[in-house]
Length: 95
Image: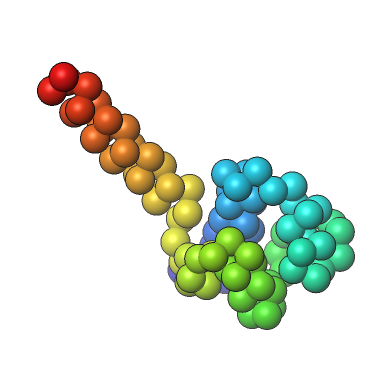
């Protein structure tokens, strides 16, 4: 994985986590101690997040730090949702 791919995936994961937890990015930025607009500016510049910021985000969302960097969180979240829906469908079909 290239540096650019890591940077993009990390920012995508942060944005997606904020979305599914219904946390505005500005609130997240304030909660983890970075300035308002930090994520937008950093992503635009392709800046790698400091490990301290990654740790704070992971603690905020109660997830492992490697999820932010290596995992496609959106895809894994959607897989879990599909699995849950399939289980519900089975229950309905069984009556």
